[in-house]
Amino acid sequence: MRESTKEIIVGSLLGDGWLTALSPKTGTSRYVVKYQGSSKSYLLWLKRQVLELNPAPLKVVSKYSQYYFYTKARTDIGEMRKLFYPKEGRKVVPSNIGKLLRSPQSLALWYQDDGTLDQRSGYHWNAMFSTYCFSYSECVLLANVVWKNFRIHMSVCRCRMRGKMYYRLYVRSESMPHFIKIVRPFIHPTFRYKIVGKTGQQ
Image 1 (spheres, helix red, strand yellow):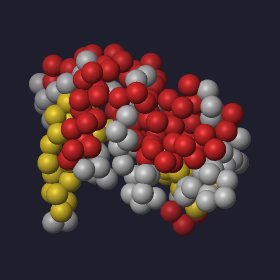
Image 2 (cartoon, rainbow, N blue to C red; image 1 turned 90 degrees about the vertical axis):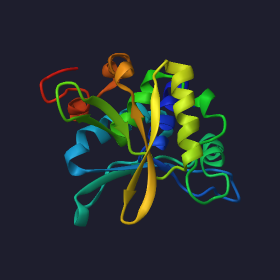
Image 3 (cartoon, rainbow, N blue to C red; image 1 turned 180 degrees about the vertical axis):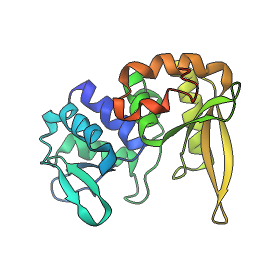
Image 4 (tube, one colour; image 1 turned 120 degrees about the vertical axis):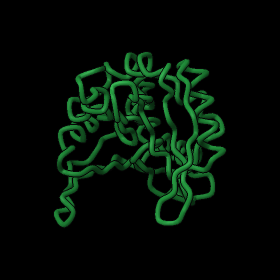
């Protein structure tokens, strides 16, 4: 697998992408990603970025107005499955994420999946990552890695939904200009609103 393809998958797996269960016979897995119809152009772009993985044609879930694709089953994807799903259960943040999340493209892919731009006034302008499927310690690990690899300050914030406590990452104000500068070249037009504030600030 080429490094650029791996960067795409790493960013996607931190967001909405997933890998199918590991085949006990072949040790292979497939990369799968699904989006709402409004993001179909982004999904098509993403599919073109992973052509070496032989992605199948887009399929539609008409009931939910969603589109998805999956790739050919491969052993290198299977190795990534072992990292992100070590117990064949929920997706986790691998302990070696510092070696995986190193490129601005990976960071941008992750942000496009799970990020929102929170601008409630001219001075309150921050990016948030909805890392609800990850534990507190995993979010702390991610924040530390983002600081080490990109020099972006993040805080781990708690939020309560439906009676349960979840965690999300918050890009601190002092790091926002640097964060936007890093991810901007890799933001697809579909998600440009995630780097442009209500006043056009970016």
